[in-house]
Image 1 (tube, rainbow, N blue to C red):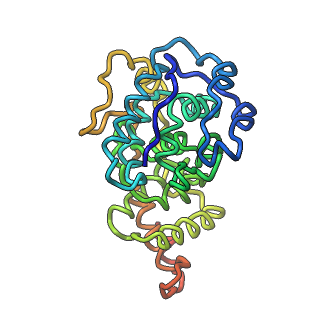
Image 2 (image 1 turned 30 degrees about the horizontal axis):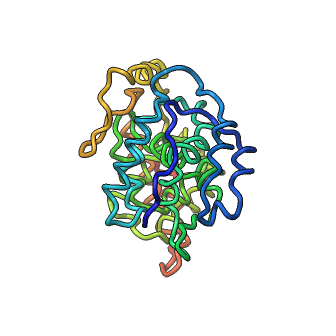
Length: 300
């Protein structure tokens, strides 16, 4: 699939409002017509500050590497490689990452060709994306924000290895990512543990467990079953400010995220054991249901 880089890359990342994005993402653009760059340039807002963490060239170089590295593979295979490196490159607080204008800017001015490469398919000589939300949309759907947030929610402090495991399964990204339960760090790590142990393998199994866990979470408080440690926000801020002194992302080794605290091992273990028992009765098509054991739940 060819995408063609026929636009000027800005020096700094800025912001494009949702209203402007909605105006330019016409049906013809979504189905392959070029974006109106003049309109986007004139309606772009300044970055949040003057920090070098907003340098657009770093993001663009990363995305160029992705498209070259995964040219011969399915684009979905790139998610696990890109998510931790995108998070490492775009050093933001969670509050900053909720600003959809930043993600709109990356998708519309820095790398619209990447959006088409990742989400498009060829039709009548054009690359059709199909969903405007991949350019500008909800945080768990938009092309770049979904990967940044996946890395943020599934990392274990500075360790990005759980992110790779989570992003290697599209059902985690498409289903579990948007659930509030993953704001609880031990829960996110327990889901990854089940994937790595092979307890859940297929999309049906992932979806069945996630739905069962979400339903159970309405009556069982995860923070009580598996308490978490407070994050070190000072360490996070130091990591953000060290963007100039830290090395750029490495294509062959995982970077190191902020040293803001690992998830307590015992909490991950307790939730993993509970999820395994819950999975035995999870409504998965093709799997014989088993009666729920109240004793098993209480023993945790």
